[in-house]
Length: 139
Image 1 (tube, rainbow, N blue to C red):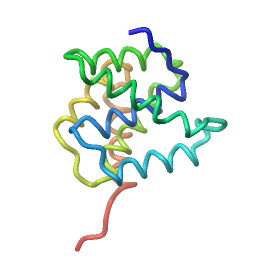
Image 2 (image 1 turned 60 degrees about the horizontal axis):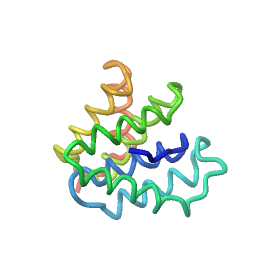
Image 3 (image 1 turned 120 degrees about the vertical axis):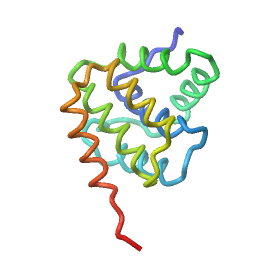
């Protein structure tokens, strides 16, 4: 794969991949991605108009049998190690955004955690934080 991603693009790709992992792009997940891009300091200076280009890279990779591994490899190459936990946290937030984490999303999170070298204790804390941030009132 010859695509190159900036660190910010890699974070966006991680979020889009998490949303698309179950075969659908839920509106609530895409809204969550848009909000994070607009408010998080790591996205200062990022042009949201670039999101469709990054999304197309993700979708193209997902068409290949080894696309998830290729995507995670590309993300890992594009991110400085100091942003690995950030990428995992953003992915967890997207997965939790709709209140229904699918098996495909869990599998992608597992691959991300492993390939980005996010240790188990840290990942558990990140996951718990995402669940807490996206909790809903009981009906």
